Image (tube, rainbow, N blue to C red; front, side, top):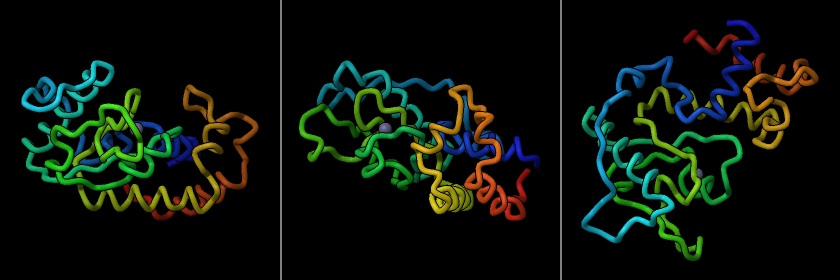
Length: 186
Ligand SMILES: [Zn+2]
């Protein structure tokens, strides 16, 4: 895998909703046409999150139908502090997120939910331990190199390309040096 591929993978890992799906068994579990409405026997879902709540619930249903009992929430660049605290990188039993949503109010009272809030871009992946562990290890290397969300936002164009002035950034180099040799998937 070349440097550009690895750089792309950093970006993928940080930003894609589905950072590992194209190289894992998760991929074959995608693509169901199943559609469900928002939970109807509980509090009404606020209109500003109804669509994303319905999509998230459908995704949970897909995961469950495929035999998974747990999911996790991949991180993305620019995630808010509440998402980082309550859902990002956490593993949940599917029933913990079933019918869960926050209808505004004091964030101190929010419970874990996907989406957590209007405009939340988080989603879930089926929890597969080996994939999750690898993603967390990658994430830790990024953090260890000081490649925080803000830094990565600055380094990459919105298109996903690393900006020319950062191509030789020592933090990226150090990350690549650590990842090369431990990455046997590509
Ligand atoms: Zn979020």
